Picture 1 (cartoon, rainbow, N blue to C red):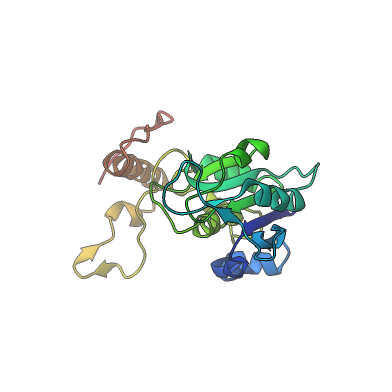
Picture 2 (picture 1 turned 90 degrees about the vertical axis):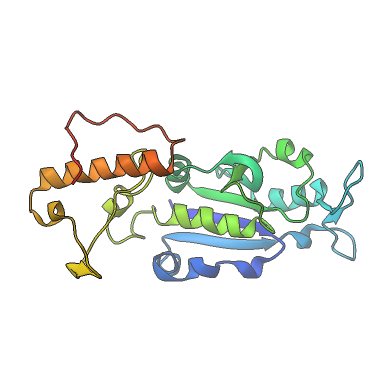
Length: 237
């Protein structure tokens, strides 16, 4: 099963963008995953290819029309398509690594990129859209958010990263932020590598990394509950 992403956007030229480079790009070229970007305006019926209209009740900006979006979604995701339909919006549930892993293990996704003031609310229920938020910020449109989501998913597809375990020991993989990393040179501007990392004692290194991950999580993300350890005492050096 190949992970297949379909993007519904007013700017299909933005894709694959950065996903066409580095490991994601190699995976795309190698057929490990697939991507298509569809122009929403192609599903408008008037000669101006209108996709938006003024908001009901008044107010600034424009709102993307439900009927145009419905035709675009139906074309991209006909009956029987098992892929979830996502709407990138700051009103959505926060994207988590757990949700990313679930998406990466599935058949792909159909991703709707909103613009203007947003989309007609009726399309969310009418086409069973899962509203997804990538952060407490407002972007010009859903395209940048879609790229972020896809990057997070694609890197977990088997064969994309050099080593599968690279996706296991990282931030959020076990409910913690990742521990700090070091490499050569041994000393940099008077700062050395922690002695424990050059000790060769793997059990001690594991305890140090766990302690550092817990400390970073408590200090930087107090909203994340620190999961219980496996019983191995921790140490910080």
